[in-house]
Length: 346
Image 1 (cartoon, rainbow, N blue to C red):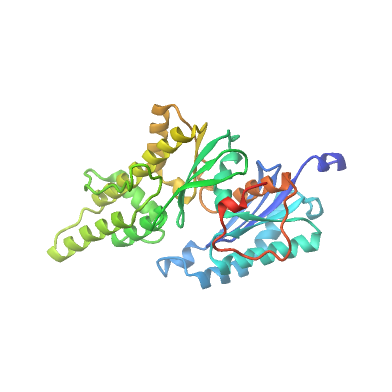
Image 2: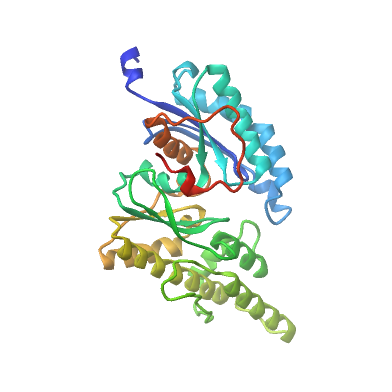
């Protein structure tokens, strides 16, 4: 590769350690994934039935250096030719975030490269640009373990959250319902599978909140499922778990789809972007695809490997700041409650 071609090309090494995935990626020009490595901790946390923050942090420490070395080698890019180092600054578990931030700062200092603190949810949203160009204004439906949001994107890198969960996020509700139904961790995929296999459906409520609200609430739905499970147990009745799973999933999906479509219409969005770990849910993907086809709405959904936490999405979002020369100070701190709107480009 010639020096002139290197000058016209950006290579961002991105690090993601916001929860229980240690991921490092190298992204070319914000869109082309050269390598995306993920060291999963799922097997470790299965024993606890969920993510234990202290354990997650220690596991990140154990593997972060090795994953960074492997990613650079697999990318075919020499460390000196990297353009910048990006890392998830927040939101996330503070201990886990700190491991990635320290590793990214160290590499940035050693190579004398710019550091780009990146918003985790911006990463989920811009994972869509790894597949197809985003048209503005756009609407993003973000569904993950800790977030359920509708975000208006009037222009590139600008974010306006118009609706958010008032209690449990979708992913949290799935995990709690899965635990009640006796599913192993992580429970979301098991509930999705049971819902598809169900021959009947247990009726469950839909929570719409105020008529003009884009907010979400899933705590009541979760409680309704727990009541059904507890009543069956007290009466000694056999519970049709698949039927309950289907009722729960249909309730969640209907509310998400209806509010997302309404938001697209209200804001004149050219595209609807599905983002976050729950975007891997087959029931939600299918329902959105069918409804958007009917409504003539262009829908973007990342491939499965870019739905769950990964560093490629962080590199894609960091490119927004790279293009504008918006770099982070080496004194940058982890921010578990980092605001998406405040992270917007200038």
